[in-house]
Image (cartoon, rainbow over all chains, first blue to last red; front, top):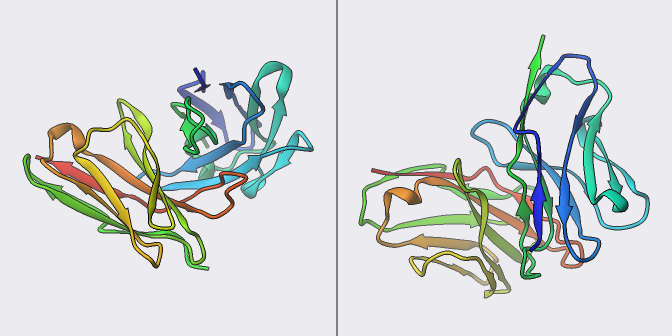
Amino acid sequence: AQSVTQPDIHITVSEGASLELRCNYSYGATPYLFWYVQSPGQGLQLLLKYFSGDTLVQGIKGFEAEFKRSQSSFNLRKPSVHWSDAAEYFCAVGRDPTGRRALTFGSGTRLQVQP
Amino acid sequence: KAGVTQTPRYLIKTRGQQVTLSCSPISGHRSVSWYQQTPGQGLQFLFEYFSETQRNKGNFPGRFSGRQFSNSRSEMNVSTLELGDSALYLCASGWEESTDTQYFGPGTRLTVL
């Protein structure tokens, strides 16, 4: 069955340090992949998306993600984290396990930024 | 363009009552999806409407229903509320059918007492 795994529930980094959030998916074909960010009490903001082509995609707020088909991964990166990046991050694929057009989300990674 | 708007933002109900949540998609978007977010189950798909027709439905009981109007605005209704229905309900709109991109609203926080 299709699934999205975010192995890290909680990550703490120092401000200015680099960041990598992991995401693995299980899907029969190359899915549409997304990263969303959610600040406390807010909705989800789209950071970036991958559909095809260049496997390194750039997003908003200085984030980027790399699609690796061989590893079924779509990890999110940022070279230098800012305190305002503290939030919860969700990886998602654009289809549910039955193939319907419905986002399937990972369980999320909560990012804490230390001064 | 204005983003997805949801009303109300916060709602408190008691068990057994029913509730209606509203969502206005981004102008020009014809698809509206609803998701439930809880600490235990995470983000789960409820249903999707496109051009006033329900196109997809998640694995939720029949107490959860929705509809979409000709202006693409959507409403979600939950009848006979249970404590477990307490959640953040998120609406998402999209038009890029081939790429599945969805843009989310701020959500409605429903508390069932």
